[in-house]
Length: 155
Image (cartoon, rainbow, N blue to C red; front, side, top):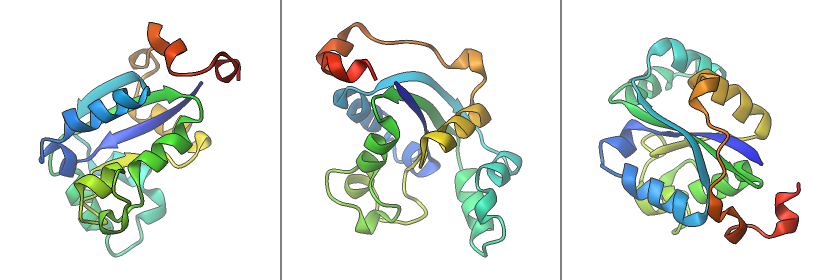
């Protein structure tokens, strides 16, 4: 099964939405194989958002991501990067579809509550950036056969 990185941003943490987001993840049948709270710093944000460092909004982005601790998670599932990106919704919460996390819980492009890896390749890089190998567990819950069909688990 594929893995992805998710960060519950300060806008999620400060609004006390952690439990709601985790409930929706688990209710969907997505497996959480790693989770921790951490305080981000400019060094890790410059690495994580290296493609945005030269943009005029980067200092504000940095400040918003350091405003409080974040919750980082590794999720596992069949086609999880795609599945979770759809669950997350588009970047700007005002444009996100109802039923998505951003569509239901945010009104901003910056304070958009959640980060989700955009490709399986980037997920591997991002997971390694935020988690040590021993912090991610090779865990598959017993109910997985009630979440996926047998033929889906063989891929």
